[in-house]
Image (tube, rainbow, N blue to C red; front, top):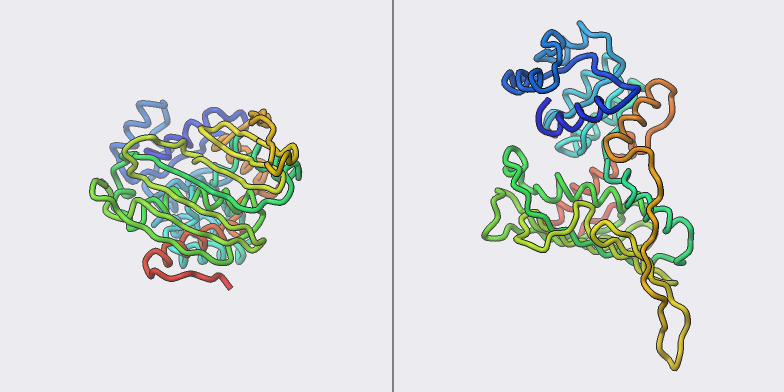
Amino acid sequence: MGGMGDAWINAVNRSVDVQFAGFVEVNQEIADEQVRQYGFDPDTIFTSLEDAIDKLDADGVINVTPPQFHKSVSVIAMEAGFPVLCEKPLAGTLEDAQAIVDKANETGVLHTVTQNYRYSQVAQTVKSVLDSGELGALGAIHVEFYKGPHFGGFREEMPHPLIIDMSIHHFDMMRFFLDSNPSQLFGRSWNPSWSWYSGDASASVNILFDNGVPVTYNGSWCAQGMETPWNAHWRFDCAKGILSVEHDIVYIQTRNGVVDGRTQHNAKREVELVPMERQAQDYLLHEFYEAVTQGKPTGTPAQDNIHTVEFVFAVVKSCDSGQIVNFK
Protein backbone atom coordinates (compact mmCIF):
# COMPACT_ATOMS: atom_id res chain seq x y z
CA MET A 1 0.00 0.00 0.00
CA GLY A 2 3.05 2.25 0.20
CA GLY A 3 5.57 3.36 -2.42
CA MET A 4 4.19 2.59 -5.89
CA GLY A 5 1.13 1.22 -4.09
CA ASP A 6 0.28 4.81 -3.29
CA ALA A 7 0.29 5.65 -7.02
CA TRP A 8 -2.19 2.83 -7.67
CA ILE A 9 -4.37 3.89 -4.74
CA ASN A 10 -4.68 7.28 -6.37
CA ALA A 11 -5.30 5.78 -9.81
CA VAL A 12 -8.16 3.67 -8.47
CA ASN A 13 -9.56 6.63 -6.53
CA ARG A 14 -9.61 8.67 -9.76
CA SER A 15 -11.47 5.91 -11.65
CA VAL A 16 -15.24 5.98 -12.08
CA ASP A 17 -15.27 2.27 -12.95
CA VAL A 18 -12.98 0.60 -10.40
CA GLN A 19 -13.01 0.53 -6.62
CA PHE A 20 -11.08 -1.39 -3.98
CA ALA A 21 -12.43 -4.62 -2.54
CA GLY A 22 -9.51 -4.76 -0.12
CA PHE A 23 -5.76 -4.75 0.37
CA VAL A 24 -2.81 -6.91 1.33
CA GLU A 25 -0.09 -5.19 3.38
CA VAL A 26 2.57 -6.94 5.48
CA ASN A 27 3.82 -3.71 7.07
CA GLN A 28 1.37 -2.59 9.78
CA GLU A 29 2.82 0.93 9.96
CA ILE A 30 2.18 1.46 6.25
CA ALA A 31 -1.32 0.03 6.56
CA ASP A 32 -2.10 2.31 9.51
CA GLU A 33 -0.77 5.35 7.66
CA GLN A 34 -2.85 4.65 4.57
CA VAL A 35 -5.96 4.12 6.70
CA ARG A 36 -5.35 7.58 8.20
CA GLN A 37 -4.56 9.08 4.80
CA TYR A 38 -7.45 7.64 2.79
CA GLY A 39 -10.02 6.52 5.33
CA PHE A 40 -9.93 2.82 4.35
CA ASP A 41 -11.76 0.25 6.46
CA PRO A 42 -9.06 -1.62 8.46
CA ASP A 43 -11.14 -4.79 8.19
CA THR A 44 -10.45 -4.87 4.44
CA ILE A 45 -6.66 -5.02 4.95
CA PHE A 46 -5.02 -8.46 5.19
CA THR A 47 -1.48 -9.75 5.65
CA SER A 48 -1.68 -12.51 3.02
CA LEU A 49 -3.20 -12.72 -0.42
CA GLU A 50 -4.69 -16.13 0.34
CA ASP A 51 -6.61 -14.68 3.29
CA ALA A 52 -7.81 -11.71 1.23
CA ILE A 53 -8.98 -13.99 -1.60
CA ASP A 54 -10.85 -16.17 0.89
CA LYS A 55 -12.69 -13.29 2.54
CA LEU A 56 -13.20 -10.64 -0.16
CA ASP A 57 -15.44 -10.41 -3.21
CA ALA A 58 -13.03 -9.13 -5.85
CA ASP A 59 -12.61 -9.27 -9.65
CA GLY A 60 -8.85 -8.83 -10.05
CA VAL A 61 -5.52 -8.25 -8.33
CA ILE A 62 -3.13 -5.31 -8.70
CA ASN A 63 0.33 -6.68 -7.86
CA VAL A 64 2.50 -3.82 -6.56
CA THR A 65 5.05 -5.88 -4.64
CA PRO A 66 8.83 -5.62 -5.18
CA PRO A 67 9.99 -7.64 -8.23
CA GLN A 68 11.23 -10.65 -6.25
CA PHE A 69 7.65 -11.30 -5.07
CA HIS A 70 5.89 -10.88 -8.42
CA LYS A 71 5.94 -14.59 -9.24
CA SER A 72 4.52 -15.84 -5.94
CA VAL A 73 1.76 -13.23 -5.77
CA SER A 74 0.79 -13.54 -9.44
CA VAL A 75 0.73 -17.34 -9.37
CA ILE A 76 -1.48 -17.41 -6.26
CA ALA A 77 -3.88 -14.97 -7.93
CA MET A 78 -4.04 -16.79 -11.26
CA GLU A 79 -4.50 -20.19 -9.62
CA ALA A 80 -7.49 -18.69 -7.80
CA GLY A 81 -8.86 -17.38 -11.11
CA PHE A 82 -8.06 -13.70 -10.56
CA PRO A 83 -6.76 -11.60 -13.48
CA VAL A 84 -3.56 -9.75 -12.54
CA LEU A 85 -2.37 -6.23 -13.32
CA CYS A 86 1.30 -6.38 -12.30
CA GLU A 87 3.85 -3.62 -11.82
CA LYS A 88 6.87 -3.89 -14.09
CA PRO A 89 9.11 -5.75 -14.38
CA LEU A 90 7.13 -8.90 -15.07
CA ALA A 91 9.44 -10.55 -12.50
CA GLY A 92 12.81 -10.11 -10.83
CA THR A 93 14.44 -12.92 -12.85
CA LEU A 94 13.92 -14.32 -16.31
CA GLU A 95 13.09 -17.71 -14.80
CA ASP A 96 10.34 -16.21 -12.62
CA ALA A 97 9.00 -14.24 -15.60
CA GLN A 98 8.76 -17.42 -17.68
CA ALA A 99 7.01 -19.18 -14.79
CA ILE A 100 4.36 -16.43 -14.77
CA VAL A 101 3.86 -16.78 -18.52
CA ASP A 102 3.56 -20.55 -18.15
CA LYS A 103 0.96 -20.16 -15.40
CA ALA A 104 -1.01 -17.64 -17.47
CA ASN A 105 -1.01 -20.06 -20.39
CA GLU A 106 -1.92 -23.01 -18.14
CA THR A 107 -4.82 -21.27 -16.38
CA GLY A 108 -6.00 -19.06 -19.24
CA VAL A 109 -6.16 -16.19 -16.72
CA LEU A 110 -5.11 -12.70 -17.83
CA HIS A 111 -1.78 -11.41 -16.56
CA THR A 112 -0.78 -7.98 -17.88
CA VAL A 113 2.14 -5.68 -17.04
CA THR A 114 2.12 -1.95 -16.30
CA GLN A 115 4.51 -0.65 -18.96
CA ASN A 116 3.08 2.81 -18.40
CA TYR A 117 5.68 4.70 -20.45
CA ARG A 118 4.01 3.46 -23.64
CA TYR A 119 0.83 5.24 -22.65
CA SER A 120 1.83 8.90 -22.57
CA GLN A 121 0.98 11.54 -25.14
CA VAL A 122 4.67 11.78 -26.00
CA ALA A 123 5.08 8.06 -26.74
CA GLN A 124 1.79 7.82 -28.60
CA THR A 125 2.71 10.86 -30.72
CA VAL A 126 6.08 9.35 -31.65
CA LYS A 127 4.39 6.08 -32.58
CA SER A 128 1.83 7.94 -34.68
CA VAL A 129 4.49 9.85 -36.64
CA LEU A 130 6.59 6.75 -37.26
CA ASP A 131 3.58 4.71 -38.38
CA SER A 132 2.37 7.49 -40.71
CA GLY A 133 5.36 7.04 -43.02
CA GLU A 134 5.78 10.82 -43.24
CA LEU A 135 9.52 10.57 -42.61
CA GLY A 136 10.17 7.50 -44.73
CA ALA A 137 12.33 4.58 -43.70
CA LEU A 138 13.76 4.60 -40.19
CA GLY A 139 17.55 4.22 -40.19
CA ALA A 140 18.62 4.47 -36.56
CA ILE A 141 17.56 5.53 -33.06
CA HIS A 142 19.66 7.28 -30.41
CA VAL A 143 18.47 7.51 -26.78
CA GLU A 144 19.95 9.57 -23.93
CA PHE A 145 18.72 9.23 -20.33
CA TYR A 146 20.21 10.92 -17.25
CA LYS A 147 18.63 11.15 -13.80
CA GLY A 148 19.90 11.17 -10.22
CA PRO A 149 17.06 9.93 -7.96
CA HIS A 150 17.61 8.94 -4.32
CA PHE A 151 14.98 6.26 -3.77
CA GLY A 152 16.44 4.31 -0.89
CA GLY A 153 15.15 0.77 -0.45
CA PHE A 154 15.64 -2.21 -2.74
CA ARG A 155 16.64 -0.22 -5.84
CA GLU A 156 19.85 0.97 -4.21
CA GLU A 157 20.83 -2.64 -3.47
CA MET A 158 20.10 -4.12 -6.92
CA PRO A 159 23.06 -5.36 -9.01
CA HIS A 160 21.90 -3.39 -12.09
CA PRO A 161 19.39 -0.78 -10.84
CA LEU A 162 19.41 1.38 -13.97
CA ILE A 163 18.97 -1.47 -16.44
CA ILE A 164 16.52 -3.63 -14.49
CA ASP A 165 14.33 -1.03 -12.83
CA MET A 166 14.49 1.99 -15.18
CA SER A 167 15.89 1.21 -18.61
CA ILE A 168 13.27 -1.52 -18.91
CA HIS A 169 10.83 1.31 -19.70
CA HIS A 170 13.01 2.62 -22.53
CA PHE A 171 13.72 -0.88 -23.87
CA ASP A 172 9.98 -1.59 -23.89
CA MET A 173 9.36 1.69 -25.72
CA MET A 174 11.91 0.64 -28.37
CA ARG A 175 9.93 -2.56 -28.95
CA PHE A 176 6.71 -0.53 -29.10
CA PHE A 177 8.04 2.07 -31.53
CA LEU A 178 9.66 -0.50 -33.83
CA ASP A 179 7.10 -3.33 -33.61
CA SER A 180 10.19 -5.51 -33.42
CA ASN A 181 12.42 -7.37 -30.97
CA PRO A 182 16.21 -7.17 -30.54
CA SER A 183 18.35 -9.70 -32.41
CA GLN A 184 21.78 -8.73 -31.06
CA LEU A 185 23.22 -6.36 -28.46
CA PHE A 186 26.35 -5.36 -26.60
CA GLY A 187 26.30 -3.52 -23.29
CA ARG A 188 28.77 -2.05 -20.86
CA SER A 189 27.82 -0.90 -17.35
CA TRP A 190 29.72 0.84 -14.57
CA ASN A 191 29.22 2.57 -11.24
CA PRO A 192 30.78 6.06 -10.90
CA SER A 193 32.79 6.79 -7.76
CA TRP A 194 30.09 9.16 -6.47
CA SER A 195 27.22 6.68 -6.96
CA TRP A 196 24.92 5.92 -4.00
CA TYR A 197 23.90 2.60 -5.56
CA SER A 198 25.50 -0.74 -4.75
CA GLY A 199 25.16 -1.96 -8.33
CA ASP A 200 26.06 -0.38 -11.66
CA ALA A 201 24.01 2.77 -12.13
CA SER A 202 25.31 3.76 -15.58
CA ALA A 203 25.31 1.91 -18.89
CA SER A 204 25.83 2.16 -22.64
CA VAL A 205 24.15 -0.34 -24.96
CA ASN A 206 24.22 -0.95 -28.71
CA ILE A 207 21.22 -2.90 -30.00
CA LEU A 208 20.28 -4.31 -33.40
CA PHE A 209 16.61 -5.13 -33.93
CA ASP A 210 15.10 -7.89 -36.07
CA ASN A 211 13.94 -5.31 -38.61
CA GLY A 212 17.53 -4.09 -39.09
CA VAL A 213 17.29 -0.83 -37.14
CA PRO A 214 20.29 -0.12 -34.84
CA VAL A 215 19.74 1.67 -31.53
CA THR A 216 22.27 3.32 -29.23
CA TYR A 217 21.32 3.83 -25.59
CA ASN A 218 23.28 5.81 -23.00
CA GLY A 219 22.00 6.27 -19.46
CA SER A 220 22.76 6.96 -15.84
CA TRP A 221 20.74 6.90 -12.63
CA CYS A 222 23.34 8.85 -10.67
CA ALA A 223 23.67 11.88 -12.94
CA GLN A 224 25.04 14.98 -11.24
CA GLY A 225 23.18 17.51 -13.38
CA MET A 226 21.68 18.39 -16.78
CA GLU A 227 19.00 15.73 -16.28
CA THR A 228 16.66 14.49 -18.98
CA PRO A 229 12.97 13.79 -18.42
CA TRP A 230 11.99 10.27 -17.34
CA ASN A 231 10.93 9.57 -20.93
CA ALA A 232 14.55 10.28 -22.01
CA HIS A 233 15.67 12.19 -25.12
CA TRP A 234 15.19 10.38 -28.43
CA ARG A 235 16.44 10.96 -31.99
CA PHE A 236 15.01 8.98 -34.92
CA ASP A 237 17.09 9.30 -38.12
CA CYS A 238 14.81 8.73 -41.10
CA ALA A 239 15.11 8.86 -44.88
CA LYS A 240 13.16 12.12 -45.18
CA GLY A 241 14.17 13.86 -41.95
CA ILE A 242 14.50 13.67 -38.20
CA LEU A 243 12.00 12.96 -35.43
CA SER A 244 13.17 13.90 -31.95
CA VAL A 245 11.92 14.07 -28.37
CA GLU A 246 13.58 16.73 -26.25
CA HIS A 247 12.30 17.58 -22.76
CA ASP A 248 9.03 15.80 -23.59
CA ILE A 249 8.45 17.93 -26.70
CA VAL A 250 8.21 16.10 -30.04
CA TYR A 251 9.90 17.76 -33.04
CA ILE A 252 10.21 17.06 -36.77
CA GLN A 253 12.69 18.46 -39.27
CA THR A 254 12.41 17.40 -42.92
CA ARG A 255 14.53 17.82 -46.06
CA ASN A 256 13.36 20.15 -48.81
CA GLY A 257 15.94 19.36 -51.46
CA VAL A 258 19.58 19.70 -52.47
CA VAL A 259 21.02 23.06 -53.59
CA ASP A 260 24.61 23.34 -54.89
CA GLY A 261 25.38 19.92 -53.49
CA ARG A 262 24.16 20.79 -49.99
CA THR A 263 21.06 19.29 -48.36
CA GLN A 264 18.50 21.95 -47.43
CA HIS A 265 16.18 21.50 -44.45
CA ASN A 266 12.83 22.88 -43.46
CA ALA A 267 12.55 24.60 -40.10
CA LYS A 268 12.37 22.34 -37.09
CA ARG A 269 8.76 22.25 -35.93
CA GLU A 270 6.96 21.07 -32.85
CA VAL A 271 4.44 18.25 -33.32
CA GLU A 272 1.06 18.58 -31.66
CA LEU A 273 0.59 15.79 -29.14
CA VAL A 274 -2.12 13.24 -29.85
CA PRO A 275 -5.09 13.63 -27.49
CA MET A 276 -5.53 10.94 -24.83
CA GLU A 277 -8.42 10.64 -22.40
CA ARG A 278 -6.17 8.73 -19.99
CA GLN A 279 -2.43 8.27 -19.60
CA ALA A 280 0.02 6.07 -17.68
CA GLN A 281 -1.54 4.28 -14.66
CA ASP A 282 -4.98 5.69 -15.43
CA TYR A 283 -4.81 4.25 -18.95
CA LEU A 284 -3.56 0.87 -17.75
CA LEU A 285 -6.19 0.61 -15.02
CA HIS A 286 -9.00 1.34 -17.48
CA GLU A 287 -7.52 -1.10 -19.99
CA PHE A 288 -7.45 -3.75 -17.23
CA TYR A 289 -11.05 -2.94 -16.31
CA GLU A 290 -12.17 -3.41 -19.92
CA ALA A 291 -10.19 -6.65 -20.21
CA VAL A 292 -11.75 -8.09 -17.05
CA THR A 293 -15.30 -6.95 -17.71
CA GLN A 294 -15.48 -7.08 -21.53
CA GLY A 295 -12.72 -9.50 -22.56
CA LYS A 296 -10.79 -6.88 -24.51
CA PRO A 297 -7.06 -7.58 -25.06
CA THR A 298 -4.37 -5.56 -23.30
CA GLY A 299 -1.28 -4.13 -24.97
CA THR A 300 1.26 -5.70 -22.63
CA PRO A 301 0.15 -9.18 -21.57
CA ALA A 302 2.76 -11.40 -19.93
CA GLN A 303 3.07 -13.47 -23.11
CA ASP A 304 4.33 -10.39 -24.98
CA ASN A 305 6.06 -8.62 -22.11
CA ILE A 306 8.37 -11.60 -21.57
CA HIS A 307 10.29 -10.27 -24.60
CA THR A 308 10.97 -7.01 -22.75
CA VAL A 309 12.26 -9.01 -19.78
CA GLU A 310 14.45 -11.11 -22.11
CA PHE A 311 15.79 -7.84 -23.53
CA VAL A 312 16.65 -6.52 -20.06
CA PHE A 313 18.44 -9.64 -18.89
CA ALA A 314 20.30 -9.95 -22.19
CA VAL A 315 21.72 -6.48 -21.50
CA VAL A 316 22.67 -7.60 -17.98
CA LYS A 317 24.33 -10.73 -19.41
CA SER A 318 26.34 -8.68 -21.90
CA CYS A 319 27.42 -6.16 -19.27
CA ASP A 320 28.51 -8.94 -16.89
CA SER A 321 30.28 -11.03 -19.53
CA GLY A 322 31.69 -8.36 -21.80
CA GLN A 323 30.32 -10.33 -24.76
CA ILE A 324 27.86 -9.70 -27.58
CA VAL A 325 24.52 -11.42 -26.93
CA ASN A 326 22.62 -12.93 -29.87
CA PHE A 327 18.94 -13.77 -29.45
CA LYS A 328 18.80 -16.47 -32.13
